[in-house]
Amino acid sequence: MKRKSINMTSRVFLVLVMVLITSTASARSTKLVEPPMVTTQCELSDENMISAIITGGAVRGWKPVNRAPGSIELRYNKGPDKHIITVEVAYTSNSFVIKYKDSVGLNYKVKKNGTRVIHPRPIGWMSNLSGDIETMTFERCAIS
Image (tube, rainbow, N blue to C red):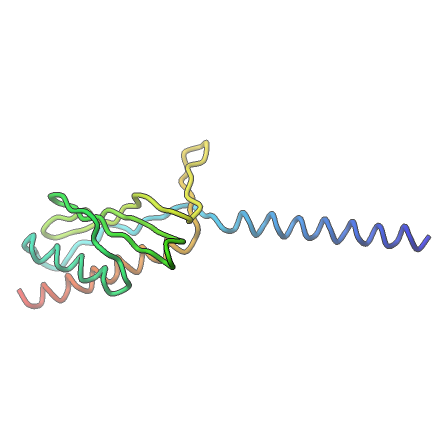
């Protein structure tokens, strides 16, 4: 009789562990939410906007990797090439918007229904980047 009790306890424990593992694994990915477009307080020259984007990115370690008219790609490397995210910052003279481009080690995928999911941390990284760039544009508007 004790043997059945132990087996039943072991089974319940195993089921609980499996539920925890499954819920933890699914919690490691969440819907990809990009920061909203930011409108600056003034019109900036291309040079000033580019400077604001690069300087704002540098605050937390984002590095420019590519430039094209109206956009700059920034990359953030968290750890020794363990977690990498690349974003495109599209800009005009009075606005910018950050869009996810690519990542390594961040569980990015597109579900069958078209929903993009990623590890939760990069969402915060992109939000911080947006705030840091906005701060730099504010400073440049004050100088202009």
